[in-house]
Length: 91
Image 1 (cartoon, rainbow, N blue to C red):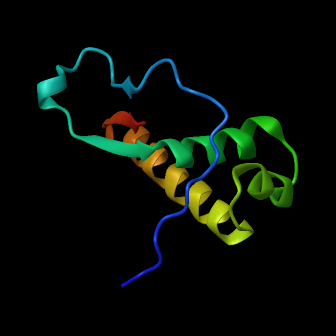
Image 2: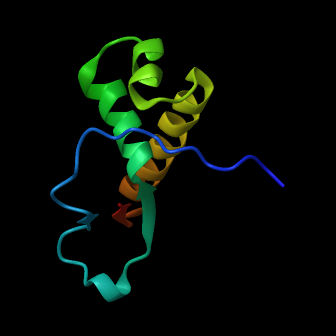
């Protein structure tokens, strides 16, 4: 049995939680799910431009966990863009 998930601090609430390619009906699309903590890590990494140690402290997680969230969130979003999938943000 693995460690229990810790609560990560997220400082924003996205207005929109679902994005899809234009002109394709939703019922015909596959989608990827991006967790809110992955989105927060991406926001800090790509927009805030501090250093990784500050971001991890900001979210109350380790540097390793922060890096894992950035990698998994990036992979999901890039995969959706390349493959034409919708993106669902889990709150």
